[in-house]
Length: 177
Image (cartoon, rainbow, N blue to C red; front, side):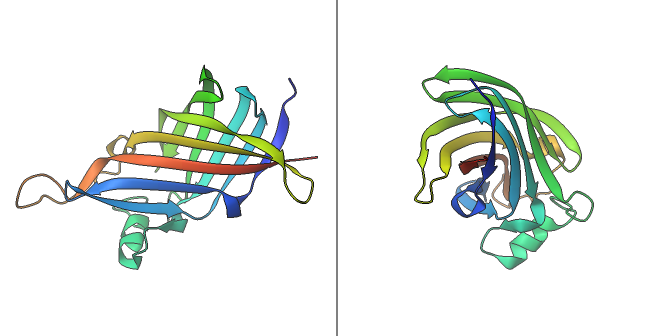
């Protein structure tokens, strides 16, 4: 088993999130700028080195006012904390091509261990002869764990923005020569 370096192809990858709004609706968004350092044998991720860095200013919920609010000190505070990072600390195989990837997630200077379910989607050669691999991942975090506590009370009870954030990751990576 040889670990090789893989480069994420941002045009065929994505980091998306969803959070409850007004206790019953869901708002979705994406981060359009991110990078990763991955050294892995895609068929056996337990020995992989995985690090992600997300440019928080690239948040996109398809609403400029909301995106600007998310960039502000009420939420991400991108002026003082421009990046969200994740560094894997433990990878456990849970099934064929399935893993629990635990690591240190840092947002706004606060670090907590978080676990994402990751699935190896397969690999093959693209039309230009490069070896590519696909991965998907999902997880949930509590935004309050990272100091993202801004909210507004609703007249009917409850709050405007939910605490649980669902994260979905789709990665296509190219093997480096």
